[in-house]
Amino acid sequence: MTIRGARWLGAAALSASIVLSALGQLGMKAGMQHLKLARADGELAWSLAFSPPLRGALLWTLAGLGAYALSLLAWLAVLVRYRLSYAYPLLALSYVLVYVGATSWPELAEPATPQRTLGTLLILAGVALVSLTGERADR
Amino acid sequence: MNDLLLLTAVALLSTSQVLQKVGATRRLAGARTPSQWIAALFSAELLAAIACIAAGTALWLAVLYRMDVSRAFPFLSLTTVLVMTASRWYLREPVTPHRWAGVALIAAGIALVAST
Image (cartoon, rainbow over all chains, first blue to last red; front, side, top):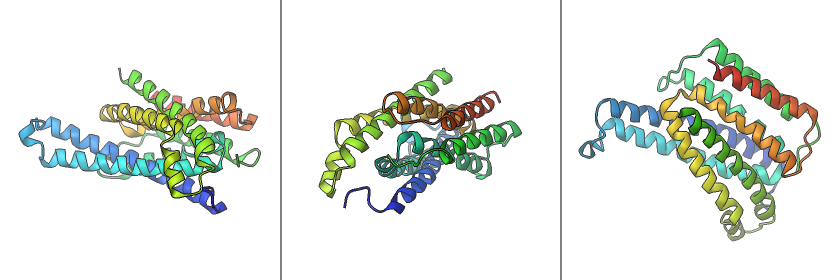
């Protein structure tokens, strides 16, 4: 069996890629948030290298990078099966997940604005148009 | 400065997509055993792709440190425009008018989010 495998594997790999990439972004942002807190506390001195804010920064960033790395592996399985011009726009579905996550997760608590929501919806509409029309997607 | 970081990250991440696709098609698609998969992962195409994505991600982390992720993230869809363009003219994939229209919508969405 080649890595292309069964048909459902393509859809599963694509879904995993989308979700893991959004989780990766949110994790990395949470890590940077903690790093900012650590700096605000003046805790970047080496003796304080294992202070809670810095440890939080490290853990979140590593978790985010880990999810990102897994999403890359899943993505290679996607690319073996689909055209890049079909699959890549679908990845933008993770924008929606990131926007929802960043605005509703208390760790980040970013403000949702009507303009950003509208922009995100436009991007989604574009993604739908790119991916749901035209010929079959197999490479 | 933030914009320069963001655009460099976007260019690196787009390049990585094309390299990943080339590597997946040329190396990974024909691999049949785990050892062949590993060998494919360490092919020149995929190593270059990983280098681009690592550099792009490092810059991206610097951007996230400075901006809201919900504002910064949609900029990444600029990569959609670059990747579609490379898919059409470098990889020679067929791209329908519908898909170009979709890319235009995505670009409009980016502009809207960016102007906030």
